[in-house]
Image (cartoon, rainbow, N blue to C red; front, side, top):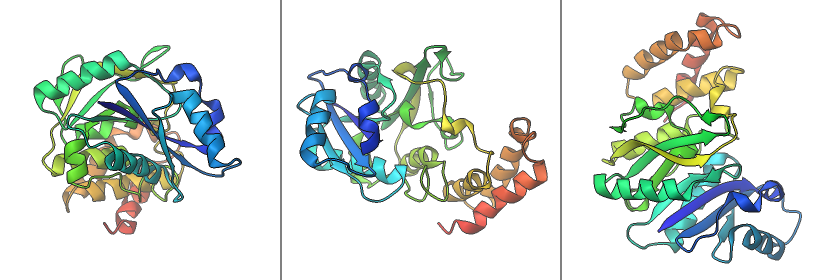
Length: 273
């Protein structure tokens, strides 16, 4: 079974186009909504059925933050779908899932016994970013390159190991990035097998908030907190210095190397995890 778990806001439901999400008997949709509700539940139920078909399941997340919204979607999946060989695609409300690619990815996961597969995003201009043309197994380093809508998971290990997105990270928190990286490295730490396959999972607009990690101090500080969350001492300091050097060309017009390094190190002080 393929379950497409979408995190969105009540105010954004009117922006979703019917043609974005194909209705298919092999697919279940789970929607988690946040934000202000202008209408009653019956209105939203009818709206979601119109968009996703009669099999849609939805819930409301009262806590702020994208990670909390994603976690609510995952919890809805765990509570209502316990069939073996169930797979969850982590989805946003602005993409077009590629069902052919997602089912191909599921077959690859079965053959290679993967807990999680990351794949390719297309845009109208081509690939979303530079991807490898060959499969490989993710490490804690390579997982840093993954964004959320590249992630397809087998729910078995995730459910029984109680793995969720860290609610301290992601949009709407003090650390507005890094949640996908932490999620994947938590899977690896729990013994899960995470692999990349060059399979197209969706089409996405050509912009990503993940491309901007330096335009304000919160985004830079989040990287330091992220490295500390994933790696042990003193390795996270080594990773931070290497990251600051590697990305210097990208941020040097906005902030000096030493100011960038200072802000990213502040993140290691604030994060107590």
